[in-house]
Image 1 (cartoon, rainbow, N blue to C red):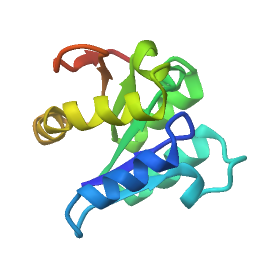
Image 2 (image 1 turned 180 degrees about the horizontal axis):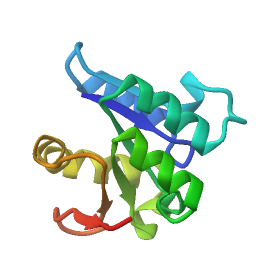
Image 3 (image 1 turned 90 degrees about the vertical axis):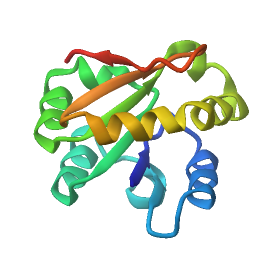
Length: 132
């Protein structure tokens, strides 16, 4: 699995997942791969050309902004977007939540046909599929 954490998620979480995942998997924070001034459309297009990336983000606007939404669709990625309460939980709260739901994230990645997006809830393990 190739996980990509955008700028709304601490790079510490990306590094924690890198330590937890198998050596054949990847976990990368946006600022480790791109300049911090990169636009969402640019990084989405780049990752789309590389195929197979799973995006973890706190920025659901990606699915609402026309250019970003279209880039995400064309890139054929699967995204998991933090519910606002999870986003506000800070680095430890976000990490704990993502680790808790990660088996469900893995399962959705296996089952769903990209492009697809899901909401990571503050409670429970049900990942709600988002329409975009």
